[in-house]
Image (cartoon, rainbow, N blue to C red):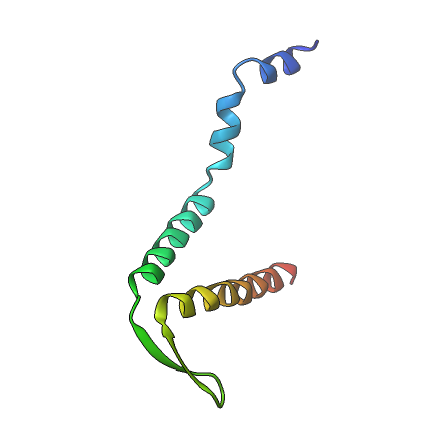
Amino acid sequence: MSPNEASRTSGGGGSRFAEALTPGRIGMAVLAIVTLLVIFQNTRHVKIRLLVPEVSMPLGPALLATAPLIGAACGSYVMARRRK
């Protein structure tokens, strides 16, 4: 066993956790938690117009349905800018 392998196997568990907690990931986790708090706090019924039909439903599930769509649109925009 080489010295590099020995240092990775002994006491290296904490560094993997530290590598996983980047500022970007922490920020995204905080943003996700705040988004869920806003969604679950808005429980009153609202009228939503979907092109022609009008639907009455709680605002929370409506936000919960649109949040992934907005996230996917933002993610695809960021990935398209990265490719350039």
